[in-house]
Amino acid sequence: MFYNHFELIDDSPSKLPELETFIQNRHDQSIWSIINKRERLQNYDLSFIRKIIPDARNKIYLSNNMDETINTYNNIRKDLKALESKEYKTHIELSKEIINDLKDLKFEFKFGTAKQRVQNHLSYKLGRAMIENSHSLWGLIKIPFILRCITKKHKQNLTQNSLPLSAYRTIKKP
Image (cartoon, rainbow, N blue to C red; front, side):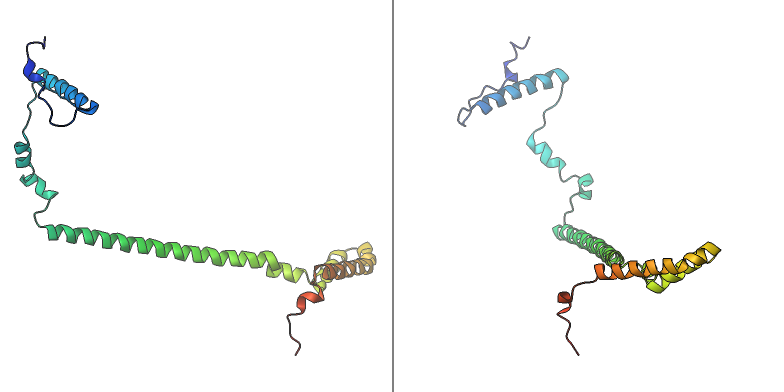
């Protein structure tokens, strides 16, 4: 069918060295020319494409004034930097808040809350035991023994949880 239409295939000798890619390129050109002929497509010259570019509809995208384009580009970059700095500031503020919260939690973990520290005093423990056991006669009889037991446990906890004297050597005497 295409044996009679030799003008569709570009068989002109190439000035470039013969490489496999050039042979493949000629094959692609011949297939493209066959498709163009079958679909009745038109080939446009490079001069026609150059006429299209300065068309009025492209002025939206390509301004004639290069300085104006550079200014808009610089303005966009400044706006982006301003937005980034605002975002960084908010991130820094949030991270500072988180760090402060973590410091508070670390202090609470190390020393406990105020409620826990008050409840850890010996007087609080003794008063609580007296209130709990004062409601019955049998509880009133047990109070002296319970109080003695609580004081022993409290003193044992103090000796176990206190630091040795070698840890306090950095403190100067008055």
